[in-house]
Length: 324
Ligand code: DGY
Image (cartoon, rainbow, N blue to C red):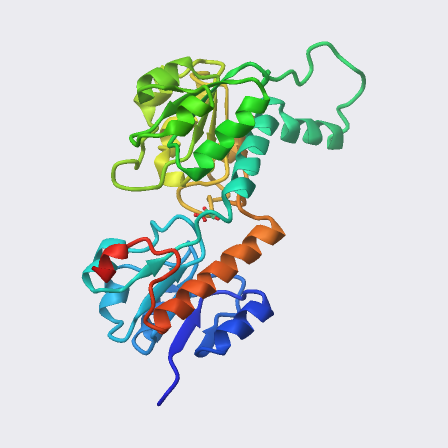
């Protein structure tokens, strides 16, 4: 009997690939950049499984061309790059990598919040530009974090982990979420509607998945509700924020500053006007990028592929309905 075939869309640690290769024939995309869509399209017809990243679009056309596909495993907790509804219709389980990246991503969201608030990237540039001539009472003054109000939009694992960090800074925590959550009370946080959260927060940190409902959740009207001293932090997905509205808000002092780990599109164009603003810090989608966490994500993605090939339930499946 021929061995199952799996396409892995980027190099992963060799020992992890070796473990996968014990179960199937693997084809690993070796480039730094993702495989172009036509490469995925061309390979998919022959595949039993695909281990992909958030940069790979697995849409209905790809799925329609995949008569043998038994498992899609995304090396990310988010899965808006995959048409999960269609995969479910076709009975294909989709795996993701929740949990292992929670604390790393929350560390980063908080680091971004602090570096925007205290203007660390600007300060580094100031030193490199040889502008540091003296200690001055007002130069590079930022915003306080300790005791300020943090609004957390979306209260899944990462949102909660950010709120826990905020407790250590004696912050008042406002939460906007649709789900019931005991942790809100445990953290002494207050659950409020989105408009109220935007009006009252000094910092707004976004932690919702990208769906039709959250696309441009933060646009002109929402930014207008925020304080002129407020800072917006997005480590969720770029599409949650309307970039043009954000640019307008940052250039008309509607809000003070923003920190973006994610943009729309990704990568952001080097000509994007957001990159011209001192009050907008943009980094390249690295919230989960610690060596240990990226390794755990790769391990989990491989576990999902192996389970799918063996006909078992994926350890972390986003569409368990396929098993009903
Ligand atoms: C995810 O996993 O969805 C993050 O955006 C990248 O780690």
